[in-house]
Amino acid sequence: MRKIVSFLVLCICSFYFGQQTSFKFDFGGNRIEKGFIPITSTSKFDKKSGYGFMDISGLKAVDNGGNALTGDFITSDKPFYFSVAIPDGNYNITLNLGDTKGSSETTVRVENRRLMLNYIKTRQGEVVEKTITVHVKDSIIRNQNGENIGIVKLKPRERKYLHWDNLLTIEFNDKAPKVCSVIIQPNKTAKTIYLTGDSTVVDAQYEPWASWGQMLPCFFVPNEVVIANYAESGETLKAFEDRHRIDKIWTQLKSGDYLFIQFGHNDQKAGNSTKSGYRKRLKEWIQKARQLGAVPVLVTSMNRRVFDENNKIVNTLDDFPDAMREIAKEENVNLIDLNAMSKTLFEAMGPENSKKAFVYYPANAYPNQQNALADDTHFNPYGAYELAQCVVKSIVDQNLPLKKYISNNFRNFNPNKPDDVEKFHWPESVFMESLKPDGN
Image (cartoon, rainbow, N blue to C red; front, side):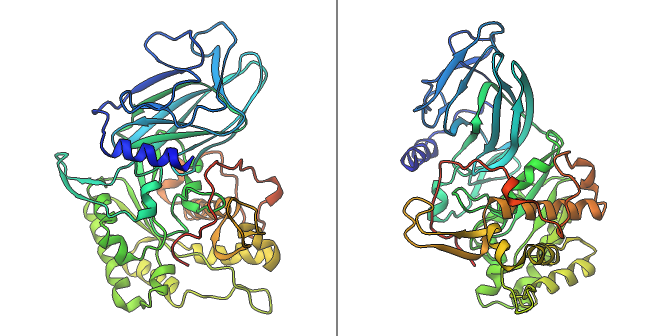
């Protein structure tokens, strides 16, 4: 699978599928809805057409007759990935999921395992229409006239990521995913929440690693809000500037958008103090966001899984959380205190059960993983999901303007009472890697 990704990246880096931004795909057999592009079980990605499946092995087309659009579908007994070459921007994706002669169970993620629809079940004979709103990005920095003025300096490992490859990639997963159609249209009006940060925020591509940033989209109402995650493993505030990640955001940020800022883990690790540029850069980012009409939001870094003899979380982040709290007051900026909420969450889990939220796995749990994984900084999907709920809870509790865009997927989460890990639903993607992300 990784060879396929590398091939796609090489192809698409030298190829940009015009400027077409709207597509209508009919998934299934030979009967095609008028005005739609046919997608069958053999529609492998082709750089000339600019769309297709990443891997066609295991795909199956089923035609039940009846309506040309909803009477047939593509399915598989393993996760499958559909990619479209498309310019960077925000898009609404309308999906028809289900089976006119059976039931279905589908989880939808995009790009690097960014959760959009979690466990959509349809009853016997039911087909449902669902809309998701997705941010697609490339590494080119453009001015307001669309002229290339720079590039984001990607790390070598990022060149394999599905979110820098000039493609929109949709992952269809779960026990019985059945996809009838996919319609893609630009969304020019959604408020965009830009996420900046490190490995605890990034859209992690590989199982079992995950972050709260990639879980956030499923908690917001589509069409109204879209999550644009620009975080990357190992980054400090300074590195985020030096690699021009923030420059890419500045050229896109518009009035009414949001800029979430969470840094601290790697700033501390790099030997920096809160007085060595950290405060200065935070204030500069706040000022710049406001100048562009956007709303800055500071997010304190969550705690590491370090307990004392009384089963209480130990602060390992020096004064970085306090510095961010102080700046929030000084600059009158909204603050999501994930540091405080994570302390409550992890202590409620306890020293042993909290391992189930982090990357703690015995040897050989994942491919090429000869040694046990025991990471007290990085999260698995369950832990990332719980932290994302903490972020959303803070938005709701503080009655921030974003509150009105929170979807019904969020149900009064209480960090003192974590969700039962045994009931957490996360069918794994095909991309797996035991290599630890950058940063600690």
